[in-house]
Image (cartoon, rainbow over all chains, first blue to last red):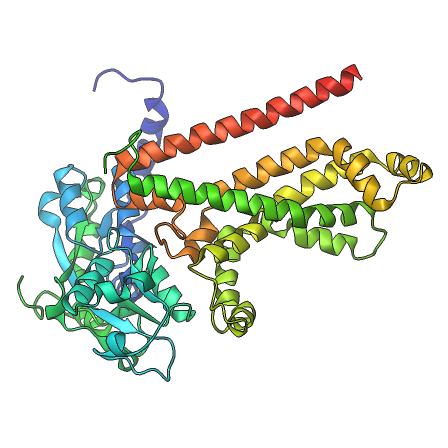
Length: 256
Length: 233
């Protein structure tokens, strides 16, 4: 870099400003993009992390596909918790994430759920009960949607239920469809269900593991707070919180 | 199926659905909005500001608010949902009918306001003249008001149609993304983008930009022409 365009001047000023300010702000600031299904446990994890470490973390929740597109176009995130294993890997391939930083923070569990408390939901519900709508997440966008489709396939219910599917763009919207009782039943993430007894926790052998990977993005390669957060997320105390929300962590889940 | 113009069968289905939705909504809106605009123009009632504000509400509200409340209201425990269930037609979310109703609400001000503006611009004079010549109110409306207020109606038609085509937030909330039923262009573009199918997203999005530009071009070209005619007269 020996030639500067006039446009780079403000950038230089800004980085200089940051450089001057950085010793003043001793704790690091982190922006973390979190897949919608994991936002509830993440709030709790971050509260714990901030207490331990003094760092400031800003959480942004949304769909992994949108985050991928935003990161690709320069969104200022330091850490990305995806709902799948594919996108973090892709970001590494594109040089947008740090190669060795990919790790599995949780394995998601799928639940068939109804917001109607009088309904008991179990393995036979979909084949025996009559209903108008079954909410699932979009299989193209959400790993939970893909898993839900696999379950229906395994149970041999695809043909029978297909016309009743209503598709949420992510798992939060799918939850909303069921919670508002517009759909009688829906496949959602275990982490979203207020009371697991009300739903049917789908056995893991009915679908591919919902492996949720996280990665540190290239722009945070000098940010020690990002590495501390990633270390924390793999710690035993984090595992307890993650499991509390119906997820499994690497050590408790079968190797796939 | 072979893609046509870079668009798949799924894309074309969404396009045809969107056009069907927007056309139907526009026709319904013109029928409902005309008497409302007429009432707002002619009334002396104290209710006028209140009704006017209610009509304009969708202009201000974020689509997510409208979508969220529609989802609740039209759901099995909402007032609209209970009504439609008692009629034996089930609930409206995730159906084409539901989208039509939501779009009518969402695009309402875009149709009422141009009509109202052009009716107000007419003033009382043509109506009084028509009345002195013995025309009934019905007659007056169809032979005097409608032709004179034509620009307002055309603007309202174009805006109502275009605004429904561009609708996204409300449909995303209550649609359920069902191909051929509720999967309109904007929702499909969103799905393409989110699932990283950027090439498909591009062809549909570029189509939307061209469409919107042409619509606005017609609208402004038309308004320009109207002004010129008025100046000449």
